[in-house]
Amino acid sequence: MVLLNGNAKVRAGSAMNDPGRNGDGVSRPAEIEALGRRIQARRSQRGVTLDVMAVRTGFSKCYLSRIENGKKTPPLDTLASIARALGTDVNALLSEERAAVAESAPFFRVLRAGAHKREVRPESAFGYEYDRLIEGEPAMLMHPYLLQFPADFDPHAFFEHDGQEFVYVLRGRVEWQVGHERFVLDVGDSVYLDSRIPHRARALAPGATALLVVTPRKEPSKPGAFGLQFPAV
Image (cartoon, rainbow, N blue to C red; front, side, top):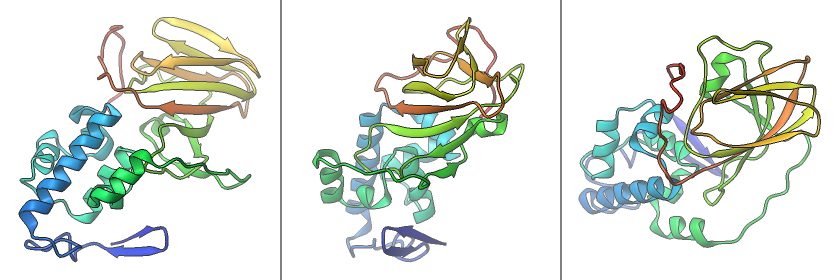
């Protein structure tokens, strides 16, 4: 597998999979332990629990814990999945210097029309369509999307996760349910919510679209607070 990072190509199955060396030629024990500490630190900074990491990556909590404790060497494709789940890139996890820069360096990004990319998220299986407006950067604390909604509610599908989100309706009408409350948003209306509250939405007009901005939160989620049914993710 070849991963693209900027202009660099990194091939899985080479340095990271070597039992004795890593990509910088550093001996395995010290580097792998340092890698595990950086992953754990980034996860704590983002307020992401091991339960949430397991859902986002598809790996077991036990396996992720062993990586963080330096007892398991992750292949590069596994490390890429972990990096995406934490809103960073592989280099920031592999390099102490890059990680420090990612946490501290001011930056800005210009978003050009038509540059967004379709992204598949767990909610996509229920008819939600996400166009990500900018690629994830190590220091990004907000993730902007254009969101289109399904025409109907799935009878058992509610969503809850770490973070907060802001939704601004650009086109059409959208019915929301947050907890036990239902309300309709028209063009120009918006809602800001703690994403730990079970929530869902549906389009009341064809092509209903909203700007969605998702931000992480450091407190862990508390699933099941409203006694609602949630989808298996």
